[in-house]
Length: 310
Image (cartoon, rainbow, N blue to C red; front, side, top):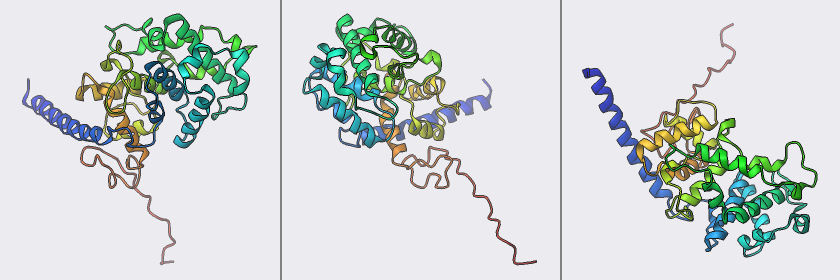
């Protein structure tokens, strides 16, 4: 090995250790249940694992848009399901119960789409006893990550009956939005968020599932994780999608091979705090990661004031 290559490896190791120390501290600072407003706080109200699983899937499915709107929509949906959401799903009949959801809207998702979602969850539970059981039918523990398992999960879910929910199934039913696939390029943010809640276990994440390894998870990619991830040089990609989600996860796996996604919550909420100055004039002046990030602040264009000379 040449001396120059050796120096590059040493520098890379030093940078990695520095980044790990900073991100581990950030993780510790956010790792308590009430650190910020987040849908997982609603999931944590429930004590039974079957309730947690059903509520988590519904909450993650609706986790798009502004936080206040997301929390409001989750609360409205759960209010219709009563105090025992898992039992409600097990006896859910779209023809009998679906009318109650007619006025429930979350952004472009309409009541019939949510009826179809609950109906698909019931079919998963009827077939495999739990959402975990249904997911495991396509999970390979020896695979490098959950990419193929997610593809199988969404494909098999959308192969279940939706006619009972929609009557006449539209060409592109809205329930399909809840079941994206990596093979189509989707980052699968909401499915990865659900898996994080179910598989990991700490002060926030519930660890309800026991047969999927946290090492296999992929980061739930949203705009905040993208901005902070690019600022920390965790990815070489500039466009969101599955490739970027895997790339950021691979960088985090170098810091913690057994639990790379543990950093997701803190990175996401750091971005939500508007502290990250990536490609912004503020640069790293407000960032908790100052010293390890590269915000690449945009330079202000010189003003075009008229010259005093004529």
